[in-house]
Image 1: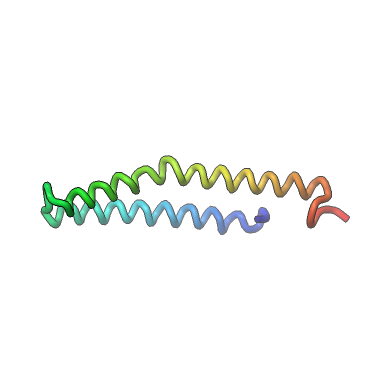
Image 2 (image 1 turned 90 degrees about the horizontal axis):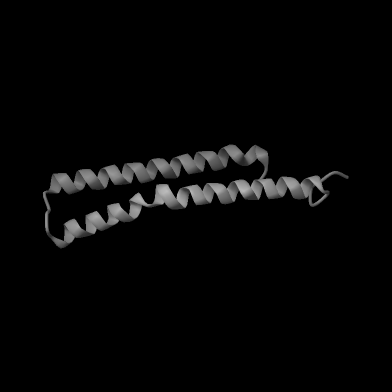
Length: 87
């Protein structure tokens, strides 16, 4: 990944965050609008919402950190004359 391609990665992360947020809002609205309580469906909806809620706080920052470390590694390797470095 080059610096010029960084905006594509940022857009992807923003898109994933928006999809997760919209998904949680839809599940919450579906849960309240359907009126299911104490059933297997309500338990399934709640479990799904709880599982999705952990992604923005744990997995998304981890992906961003790994991508940033990969960019720094590529820049360091290129500066020392690795692939695509100075000739």
